Image (cartoon, rainbow, N blue to C red):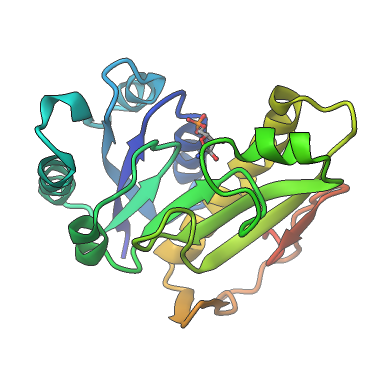
Length: 226
Ligand code: GRF
């Protein structure tokens, strides 16, 4: 059954776009019910509207506190009919009521190899630290920031002359592959949680081949089409 998903964005929405493209290519059995943003000027809202998807700005400054904002966001997500939630560059922490309402059905992407470099400066912190391998992580969301069980990670090389922007761009290219892949797995019911471990069931029809990740390591491996 096609999974109805709400996507939350704060900015460009390039991950939203990657997901939309894979849905439209028939690679993900999901339907985006709404795109919501805490910023009215988020480019992600424009991308959603261009695909005929309801796009709604819910500026957090319009609400007296976090609890009120969380309740409004949850109401809008529920109203859309979503059964799962994808955070695609959403720069707010979801409150406990929201997480409880969609427990184990919220995904986030973080531009670092968690648990290293959590927080909003992931690629900048990794570049400043001088890591040789950086990356991205898709994980389930729990009450703590950048903390829930990991679904998939991509490791990409970092170079000594990388600044934050260069490293972030190299990571982002892989975000656009692993996030649609993770959502495809969630939508097809292949993910189960066992404490902190995420288990991936084999595909009903085994993919003919794995996708080529080039010089990067992606685990679990990307399947054909991602
Ligand atoms: C991505 O790097 C994502 O990992 C981080 O915020 C950025 C969002 O980019 N959480 P976009 O809005 O999807 O283009």
